[in-house]
Length: 204
Figure 1 (cartoon, rainbow, N blue to C red):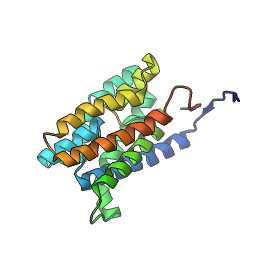
Figure 2 (figure 1 turned 30 degrees about the vertical axis):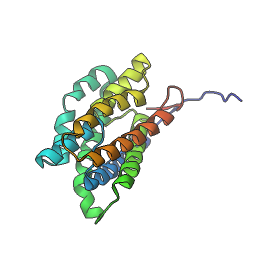
Figure 3 (figure 1 turned 30 degrees about the horizontal axis):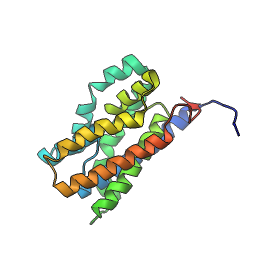
Figure 4 (figure 1 turned 90 degrees about the vertical axis):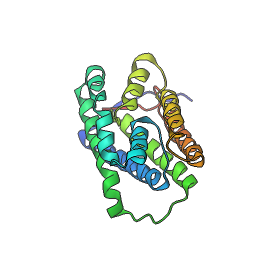
């Protein structure tokens, strides 16, 4: 059975709610990873590795790493996308610092953290993709390549994440890197299965 195509424009309120909830999911996933000493991909993964290696706060590193990509976002994706991405990056930079006051994690199983955290981050990123926002960095490149060169965002993200996780071997114990790889696969699988051209007809 073939269903008729229909497009629906998101309202500004829907965009704001999607970004608030999406970044909250990502922030919770990052908190799980930080508590379990796991790594992930994209600029969030780089920020976590720098945090583990230097002790610098995740939020500060995450904001600095993403800064150069705003130029590409503005040039290629337009100012609405750039503005929403800037807002999203700011929230994800803040959430992990606020989480200890909202959630007391005395202990977390690393494998659970990898899978649940990866799924949470994947759903959060998916929500932002569908409302024309991202978490900066690799997400911007992934969206640009999918929109302009038909390269699936999930596959591109998975390739970049693989490179970042290889670097994690120099910072984290072997078992934590293996669990991080499981988490990265979970995150990318959420995006691969749900973010395909033509799959979602809403737009912002």
